[in-house]
Length: 256
Image (cartoon, rainbow, N blue to C red; front, side):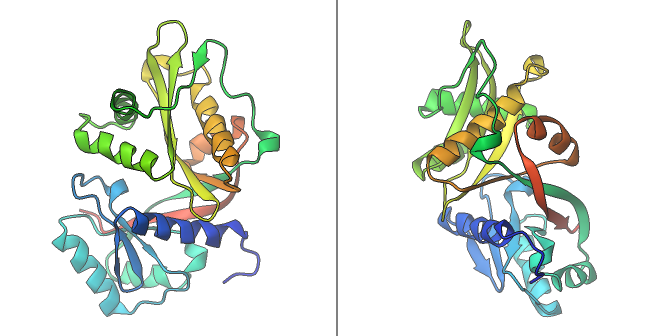
């Protein structure tokens, strides 16, 4: 393992694997497998390797075969510095890099105010609130419909100790934005699915969501809140929300 690696990165890699297992995922050799039985979306179906993994060609072929059997795109998300020998094996097996996303984190001292005037944040916990949160997230990320599986996924997240944010207009009660922090494990949690309805963008809601989620995770004992962001969002909403980058996550798959 590189000596200059940020100390948070192995904790996050361990979290990614543990969160998958606690959510019902499985194992294939040195890989932990996230498989959504109801949704073929590539971001819900992927593998995370063990730190230091050096699988041979047969192990990579076995991973590919498993994803094919599950009718899912063979795909991984991982911190490349923690398994430096893996990339060449994957590329030899037909994998191609999709993108790299920055890893970001925050601390209480740099988080701005929770949200602008005129907005309120009730945590979404009942089915109606969770359904509205799921609908906002799906609209923002291009999903064509919101299903019961989407709502159940959020409900299970809350039951396991995570939280779903639902920012509303304080006057009308209309839902404007949503996001989550995932169930904490070993004082680590992920801030994810930060989404704002198109008509409400440009009001600082995305940054407010990210800051509020980070603050609430820290209040619940999380000392390593993290998120993965596009480079554009890193420089925009997340920097304004008090987040700074310290690593990267590699997204790699076999193109269909």
